[in-house]
Every structure is written in structure tokens, then in C-alpha cells.
Image 1 (spheres, rainbow, N blue to C red):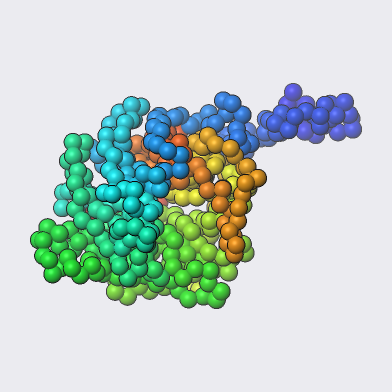
Image 2 (cartoon, one colour):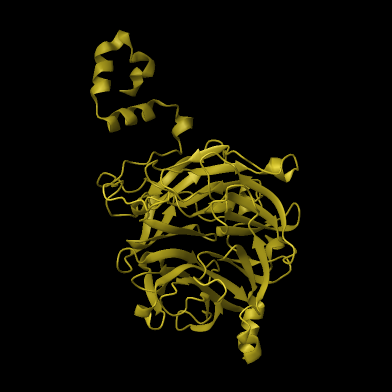
Amino acid sequence: MCKTGITDLTANNAALLLDFLRAPKAMRLLFLLMCLPAAATAQEVVHPPHPPPPGQRGSDNITVVAHLPLGIPGSVSDIEVEQDADRPYAYVGRRLHEKGFDIVDLSDPERAKVIHRWRIENEDLHQGGAMDGRYFKHESRYYYMQSVQFGQGGPNSDVGAIIFDVTDLPETFFEVGRIRQSQSPGGFHNTFTYKHSSGKPLLFATSGRYAKVFDLDRFLKGHESEMDAVLRNEDYALVGRVPVAETENMWSRGYHDFYVGYHPESGQDRFYGGGGSGYYVYNISDLADPQLLLTIVGVPGVSWGHTFTPSPDGRYAVGETEFQYQPLRFFDMQPALDGEVNNINHAIGAWHADWKSLAHNHEVRWPYLFVAGYETGLSVVNMEDPKAPFTIAYYDTYNGRHNDRAESRTRMGSPYTWNVYNGAWGVDVRNRDGLIVVSDMSTGFWAFRMDGFGRWDGRDYGMPNISSAQDWDHGPAAQ
């Protein structure tokens, strides 16, 4: 049929044109895609409508490796996967109905299994639960940090993170200690562990009007020494604060999320934060004196920043703002980094799987962007040209009712549309073999492989080998 060509669907072929217009929308779309030049469609795929038709939950180039339902729908939060070859573990946060985390053994990914479930003591008395988790390695031992948010109506509202020694998995693990911040109760919504160029293992955490920075070496040694005087001072491991730069009409005074990465060209440790009125980049080489490098505020449609992730070379960034209908935006930061401007006020590109839904957390592995898109599940986006990003793979992990807003309730004075927040919450990528893991709030743990993506090393793509995965043994400069 395609041999007829689009140009033949004219008055010279009226009958064929009429048949084309009467055909179902899906068939018309398929016809048009088949008739496009092969070079334009060799990799790009189109998301199906939601819910997807039976048998079309994923693109042909995505394979489900494992799926583990974890419990009551709505009880799953973020996900983290370890990177070392002899550490086949993923961690999934649990909240609301179950408060703690699950450890998944991926030594045989196709037979993934939960090997441990940790829950906070007196679980029913706690209000809230665990959010994102991060692992780190220090002095030949492995640790897992679980951030928590517990309300003031129950115990441990001053606890932001709980750190566990997980070196001896799969057999056992144990709690090392808890980071408390009584002056800003409510816990840590988001965190990031980072190997600083100084050699320090650091924890960045949302807390009040700052991203607070904790020295994990100091924290661990304080607990090892059992020095009561040290432990009574809850700030003994606090070594820095990254502020939110003041701008007009700020929607929020704090950060929601952030990424920390090394910038090889300048030799700087850089902090990329979403919050306030948009997005902020700081030089944090000197933790005691963070230097603001640029802002991304005043962007049409962006009143607040949520998740903000740069490309490995620090030139481009992906920004999310956590409201329904909002796409992911792509920014070119080079004009500000070159000193031409102080602020970037426009995006150069945008992407959305479904304009009715909402993209959430994401991971950059250049040239790919891995997105946990709530109701749209996992999407993989090619962002090699940030002005024209496009979908190359997808899998819908959410099995609930899609794009159903009949029961939506918007709280007074809030731009949120609350029942859009279900489905894929978090995503992570294991660089050494390209395994993709997703946490879905309702359906649990998922592991995927994408055709042609057998590992990620930035140098394979002409980029620094820098991502959210840290080189805990050698530090960021080695990457």
C-alpha cells in the first residue's frame, strides 16, 4: 500500500484518499509511519494510547527480564541499583502502608528475588515512610542509605536518613546509625551520595531551605567510636549547605531534588538543584563556600524545579517540574557557563510520552534519557540532539486506569492534580551491563534490557564517563 505514496493521496486518487480518511486513527498513523523515509523512523517509536491495547505494553526492542510485585499498591517509592560486578543488589523504598525497604538479588536477573525486607520499628506508629535510597562504598565496605520522611504525629520525625552496612549481603546487613535534624523535622525527601574530588564520601539531602551536606566518613567514624559527646551533637557530620539563590516570586524556598557531578574541563564539583523558581548550578569544590554559576528561572511554564540532571560534559540539562501536562525540558547551559548571561530563561527542546500525564524521575546515560513516567511507565529517549529528543523504547509498568481524571481533586491553592501520581516512580541503570530497573508505585519491581544497550561508558560516546553512578574507589577525576 505504501508504494502509492503520500503524494498519490490527492484528487487524482479520490477513492484511495477517502478510504484513508475513513480508516481507524491507528491504521492511518501506521500508514504514515511506513511511508516516511527509513532514516527518519529507524529508531524512533511512538507511544501507544493509554491504556495500551492488549499485547502492546512495550516496544519490540524492550525485554522484560523480571517483575516482582512487592505489596499493597501505592506502597513503593524509589529504586537504587549497585554497580560493582560482584554486588548484584537493588534496593526499593517502601512507604505509607509498609515503611522501610526491600533488597532484590539480581545475581540471576531472570530469577530476581527479594532476599530481605527491612521495616522501621513500631511501624504502625510512624506517619510517612521511606523515599529514595543511595548506596556508597567507603574503606572497602558497602553501605546503603535510606532517606525517610516521618510526620510529627509519630516517632522519628527528626530522622532524615538511616544508614546500613550491607557488605555481607546476601546473608546479612545491619543498621549503623541515623542522621537526625531536629531543627528541620520531616526527614529528607531526596538525597544524593557523591565521591567529592577531595576524596570525601558525601551525602546531599533536602532539609529546610538548603541542600545540606554530610561527611559520611565523619558520620561512620563517630558511630564506630561510640563517643557520646559526638553523638549528642546531631550536626557533627554536617560540613556544608547549598542555598537556593533568591529570585523574584519564588514558589518554593527549598530544593526538591538534585544531582552532583564532576566537571572535568574546569575541575569543579558541581551541584545541580531543582527547586525555588527553577534550577540552579553551583560550584561546590569548596564545600564551605558554594559559588553560584548560573540559574535557569523565568522559563515559560516553569514556576518550580523538581528533578534536574546534566549531560556528562555539563553542557545540557534535563529539567522536570512536577505538574500534570508538563513535559521534560532540555536546556543548553553553555551561554551562562561562558559568561554571556547569568540566567537561562528558555528551553531548547521538550519531550513528553503523553501530554495528559507527567514524566517523573529520570537518569541520563548519554545519548539516552531513561524516564520513570508515572502512568506511562518506562520510556527511553534519544537526546543526542536536545532540540529534537524522541522516544526509542518504552514499557508501560502501570496496570491501573490511565488518564482517568473523573475523580481528580485539586487542593485549594495548589497546582497539583493528585491522581496523576501513580505508576513508575524511579528508574536506575546498571552501567556495566545496561540492566534497567524501575520501581512502580503499584506494580513493584521491574528489570528490563534494551536491544543494542549492553553497557554504558561515556567514553564510548565521546563523553566523560560521568553519571549518577560513582567511582567510589578512585573518585570523580578518574571517570
